[in-house]
Amino acid sequence: MDPRSEVLLRQAELFGGSVLLAGLPADDLLGQLPMALGWSWHAGDHARLDARFAELTTFGVTPPQAPFDSAVLFLPKSRELTSYLLDAVAARLPGGVIYLVGEKRAGVERAAKQMAAFGTPRKLDSARHCQLWQVRVEQAPDTPELSSLAQHYSLQLADGPLNVVTLPGVFSHGRLDVGSALLLDYLDKLPGGHLLDFGCGAGVLGAVLKRRYPDSRVTLLDVDAFAVASSRLTLAANGLQAEVISGDGIAAAPAELSAILSNPPFHQGVHTHYQASEDLLRQAAKHLRKGGQIRLVANRFLKYPPLIEQHIGACHTLADAKGFRIYKAVSG
Image (cartoon, rainbow, N blue to C red; front, side):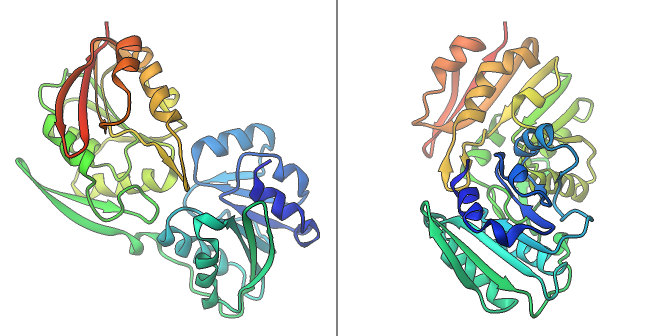
């Protein structure tokens, strides 16, 4: 059981009614609260919850339409995303109660101050290195329009400007990260066919691929619903059409790919996780056609070449700059 869920269950009498659990972990909490509903924007967590608690969870960037009397927000990493999520549930709960639960080191006390826009926040519990806060919604906000919270920036590329749209909570919100910028210089001479932008974020790589290889099928894949929405906005902003899908890692990718391009994710919340990146390297060959390529950017300190050599093919370093390396391998 996630420690944040354990803190909630210490106050289980507060959650006997129809409560929305926003951003809940994939544990037993839904089974412990009989009238609870789950809302997730992480495709993996949603799939695991849906397999056990069918029809009790929804996936997406807006709260479910089903009514609820109170809501619990599990603190996300991004302050901007926290603000949007609080407004989204508060708009549905005039006079109702919102709870915020999160780890102390994740900044839950700071995030609790964001609830002051609705009423007076009150700390209810502190245990397992987590805190539980409560606020009654005395001033309900208008329903937030997610697209109005997007940040826009333009990249000046050789074939013209690329307009990028990022939503709160998406990796490198409002700017291009160093790793992706480096990878953009190494997208030449890709084999024709089906190209995948794995861990697409705001869709920068996928949009560049579709514009540079217009005759190729391009798919963008991310575990996060806000990233999927951002990628669709980026494609639309540039008049491009490509497939954008949500899924938990490379297992959700199509087969017979001609190339996988990635700035693979390794952060989740306040913790660091390398599982998605390592799974990508271990399983990429199953999704690549013979002679298909993988090109990815990674922090120099990450020991990816041995995994690439073991599971895909000979690993070539195309670039080594600014603390990052670009790796290339061809599937045998």
